[in-house]
Length: 366
Image 1 (cartoon, rainbow, N blue to C red):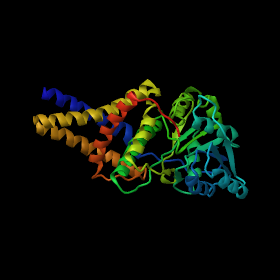
Image 2 (cartoon, one colour):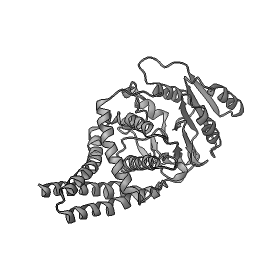
Image 3 (tube, one colour):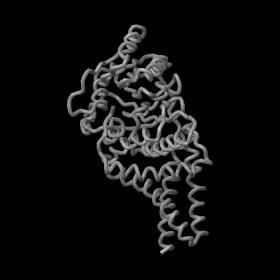
């Protein structure tokens, strides 16, 4: 019996080695195109009661080092002082505009409705998106992201890490973000894009309308980024830009409960991915979860510990250096010493999150 379990464990390790060396390693060697400023850009932000975040984000956007761009804020049913603050910005900056949503039509997702209005109102063909709680990592964010269009792309995926703070929860959130980023960026880099993150995403108006916007998932909470990229990848070219200056940093959740709610919402749309993508993600996540389950079972059985130790050692010595190299390429450094603990906690948590998503399917965006 233990030999069978060891055999299954060995298969799990082989699956993870395949992902590390053949899927993820090429990302560590990716080079972004040289930035240029040939295209006028509309930066679109949808916000609901985000005054404090907007007071930091909007000045940073308006101060971008780019010759021709506008910042378009969609004020989505806010009842704080967003309207008064943005009124003053409109007076000071001719390239800043506000679209106000008073009410969302029944049965439509509010965020997608707000983004769709912003896209329709945008002056320019090339659109760039971020969220209110994000910050561009440099004044060259627009310039760097637009370089992704140089080879005829219709969609450009960026990376958006979380701000580094004290505490284990922050380390866990940043590790989860790193693994998610490695997966979707690696797939897009190989010409098989399946998702992106709305915190740092760019596409053209033509691409949006060609793919019927958010029509295929307009009633779902979530999916304005990953499900749109899923649809666009069918008939549009997708590129990636990952340099630090092209990134936006996000403010992480402060409590485990808030983070779990956020991750459940993200996972809730996973069932809408293409079957091939679901199988690939399932193989990666499932092999990791099964690895830890089998490791604990074999450890309790106290049998063939030398073989068990060898398999664990091969996994750690081969896979974690690839994760570390990817974190360095993305300039989102993760502690190598903490990786074994973060990895265990992340995949155990992923298992329980997946179960909770199956059991409870009611979600809302604010």
